[in-house]
Amino acid sequence: MAKEFKFDEEDEKFFGSVGSFGVPKFDNEMHGGVPRGFTMIAFTGTGSGSELFAKQFVSPAEEAENTLYISTNEGQAEIVRIFQKYDWPLDINVRTIGEEYNSNVLEKELLASRYRLEGFRLEDIQRLAQTRFVDDVTQDYLTEVTNEVMALGPYFRAVIDSLDFFLQRDDPARVVAMVRMLQAHAQLYRGLILISVSTDGLSPSVKQELASIADMVLSFQVRTIGTDFETSMIVSKFRNAPENLKILVFRVTPEEGITPETVERIA
Amino acid sequence: MQPAGQYSRDRCITGVHGLDEILRGGIPYGSTVLASGTCGSGKTTLGMEFLVRGADAGEACAHFTATEPSVKLLENIRQFQFFDVKMVDSGLINVFDMDVLYSWLGLEKSSFDLDDVHSLIKAIVDIVNTIGVTRLVIDSVTTLCYKIKSEQLIRDFLFTLGKKLATLGCTTILIAEITSATENAHWSSFGVEEAIADGIIVLGDVERMGHLLRFLQVVKMRGTSHSRAKHAIELTPLGVMLTPMLKWGAVSDTQNRWGA
Image 1 (cartoon, rainbow over the protein chains, first blue to last red):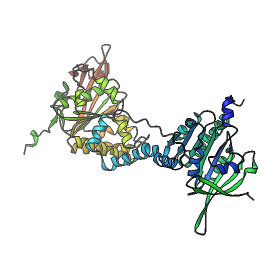
Image 2 (tube, each protein chain N blue to C red; image 1 turned 135 degrees about the vertical axis):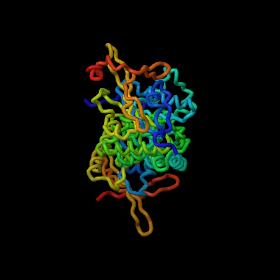
Image 3 (cartoon, each protein chain N blue to C red; image 1 turned 135 degrees about the horizontal axis):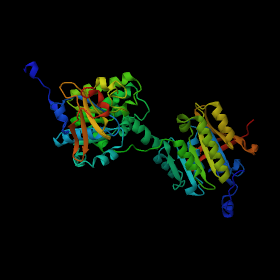
Image 4 (cartoon, each protein chain N blue to C red; image 1 turned 180 degrees about the vertical axis):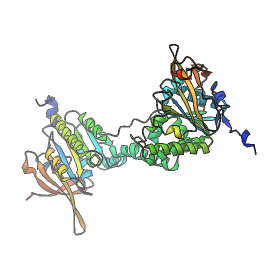
């Protein structure tokens, strides 16, 4: 039998059946916002604005402690700078996997290479002689991230930007299984999850599988028109609401961040 | 120049009661000695006492532990009166966990290739050279060699390590685990260690009059004449004590009996 969760009536009233994308004009285009319980996959291109959209998506932060932003490419300082720039809440949970990976894995590997090439200095040897245990640093970020999102309560909001980090280091089947678990968790607890993944190097089968798990599929694209760039987002899947399928050209303004400009229907 | 008959190499006095007498003064400096023994035969205690006696004389010593965590090793060795933890605290005896060394060198893997082996040799030699180690114990070389899959690589590892340590004047005891110390047994797990080592000291048990006695026997020691007789070992709070073992009486010594 499927799992059920009894929601608090006050919560149901407060959160409603849809949540904001963090982009008012986009909410209007999607007839009110994103239905609670949705998992969104954003297929992205380089420079298409998806990182900003990911941050904007967590900015409504109805409950800051129940909002999680996981970045695999940016550092804390850069994320804080953007949130401050747009006056978005700074009290949400942020995890920077890329930074952690750099300090836990890459720096360690670099140091190991240095020891192997240049040897130990006296202070290294003294430290080595005093070190009794190997640092127990887990490197299974995929499991950690899954557990972290799964620990969020009803009406949570989470972003994973981006899945590339995991697809490059783990078995894609494991990554897809993780997305499936997160989707089930979001559905059960009426949470909202946005997961971005770059289309560069993504295998068609994994792309297809991610698209089929997702309740909503977005594609962020950038193209050149004359000497200008045009950024657009394409809504190519919206579960049970095909009227929401659209191509939205957007620009980035200093006040609102990502703002759709025109609306086109997919032919 | 000394006449050929009178030349004798400088010795590293082990300080282990009775062992220096067997070795006619100690282990020739810079030798790599394999201390092979069955479990519980006193290998670790012998290795630790060898270092402690060196530290007593002001020598810098190093111990690489691969079979048990250093915390446990130091806790176990504290029961012996000859050991003073201040020797570790002051840096006279430097105890290194092989697990930590592997981690620092990025060698947290199940098997080592040629590059890994060379990195490990370089690291050990670096440590010996930088802090001027004159006595070194690796406990155990068997555990370490389990990670080296090819016999040729094990040979290269031990030969190169031994050669470099000898150049630095470091006397080394490589502890090896064996399952049997009877006459027909191998003195090492992989067979190559015993051929490369300058010396072999075997530790084991013999049954005598219903008692299991520990024994030590120097099978080989390049650069010195030595007794090849079995000696009984007693692990006392003061350290390892060696006493000559009577030739008759041991069940495994029947062929040595008079008239046998």
